[in-house]
Length: 99
Length: 164
Image (tube, rainbow over all chains, first blue to last red; front, side, top):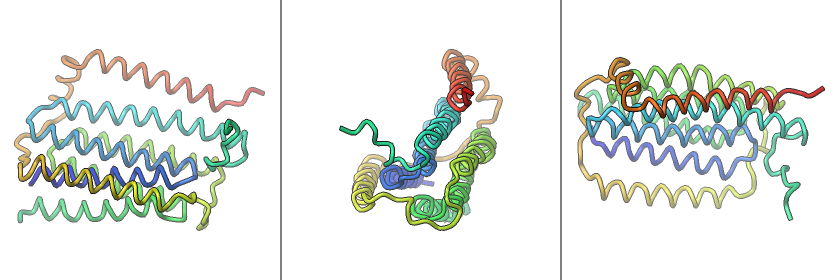
């Protein structure tokens, strides 16, 4: 298998995630797009770990998974607060600091 | 073309299709279910790369925990459970141009840099080797991550509770 198979697939997934973050306005969907991007990075880390015969890439992938879990927990708490205060989960309604 | 390449092709095609549906579908719950396909495909890629512990962690944490959290988020914010055209904002075309440009740039750079280098999963890195590495070389980062998880747990509780 070519190393580039994995790297290019991860690049495509990352860019789909970028599109999602930019184009979605529901907060939970933006969080899902962020998960897509984090997964693309993890594929890169594991592919390089196998390519270089070096285990630290997989350890880093585990750390990224843990940080993603923490991020989703806090992110959803924030989304709930926004929903409770603004009565809407749409991110473009959160514009009270707009000049 | 070996069986590994065939498996990779099937997994990659289904992952890309499902990922595109995650960011374009008009139904929030469908987006979460398509995300399951993407996350399961990533776990399949880890198996192909002989990274079995990371594959199990992916299934347990992402599909088991994070996805359930996301579904809770959908339900608690009373998202429209039917098809809705309000999920996208009006910068869809700009976003498509940005991401297509980024994918062109990255694919060009990767093809230029790594050419035809091969990846050969020679040995299976199981839980034992990973534990050796984590508890010898990465002990301090591991403790930092556990503190981070604790802080995120307390933070989420403090943010989400009602003060009445």
